[in-house]
Image (cartoon, rainbow, N blue to C red; front, side):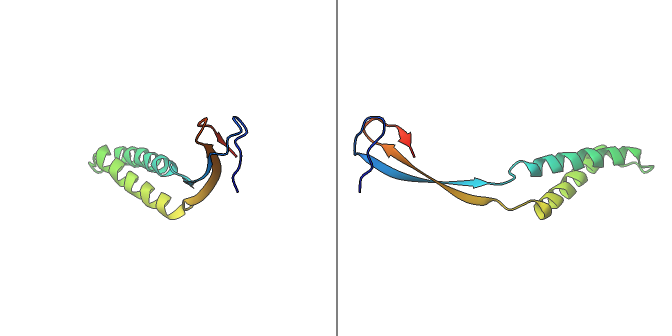
Amino acid sequence: MSINCPYCFSDQTIQVVNQQVTGSESSGFGASASFASIGASISKSLPLPVSPLIGGIAGAVIGGLFSSVFDEPKKPISMTYYHCNNCQQNFR
């Protein structure tokens, strides 16, 4: 069964299934950056001579571990639409 295009009324349409991944893609960076700044601040206030760079790296590692443990996994979703080969329009 062919579906006609609502724009040009052609029957030269195809069904397209597009897979997309959703989820918290950038939250891991935010947690790592926050923990890096906290680690750098803590290393500055320590009485021992610890470089803020080392504290920042340690904080970024700890933030990355927290975000990998507590973030939701990414879930794939499918989006189906039609494409007209005659007028090159997409529609549902």
